[in-house]
Image (cartoon, rainbow, N blue to C red; front, top):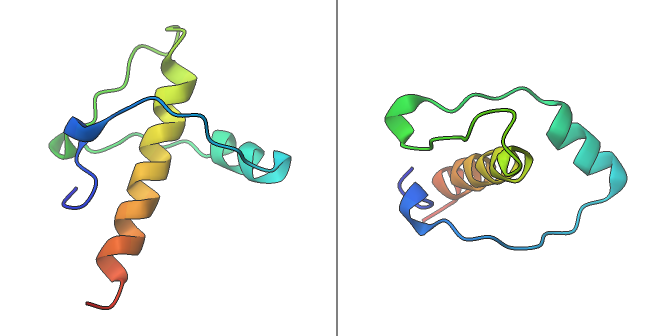
Length: 69
């Protein structure tokens, strides 16, 4: 995670369409331990937000890494 390291985490409100939110929450994704993202336990009240944030950050990382310099 060169562009979006886990040290720069913050809580924000993000708007999604219902369809996009359903797609994001429907995907099962477990981040690689080498990346440094540590998700809370699935029964934690912050799990859904952290899970969604990790998915967004990884998607942005892929976009940033594949962009032209």
